[in-house]
Length: 90
Image 1 (tube, rainbow, N blue to C red):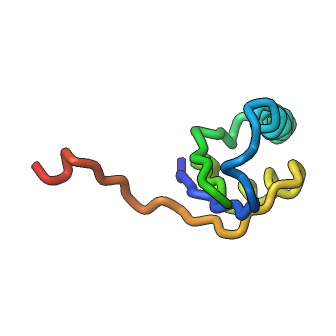
Image 2 (image 1 turned 60 degrees about the vertical axis):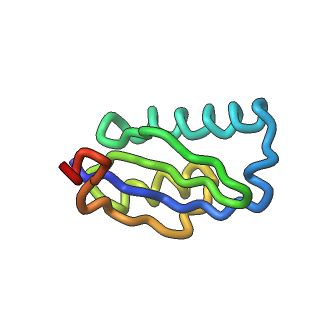
């Protein structure tokens, strides 16, 4: 199943409280339950003004539907072509 990296521009994302992040996560999980098991949220990285999310889904359209239903921006959605890590150098 394809993996996607979603860039969400959210000014002040790095200043969100634990409670605010919990609320965002709960909203996301609720939308995921409604969309069904084909789409999965793997994890997200919060930076100063952006959140980068990793999702597994059959297509980009389902990723964008999740963003739409959740009220989240999806400024860019990129399919992961391959994954490398330090063991790739061996």
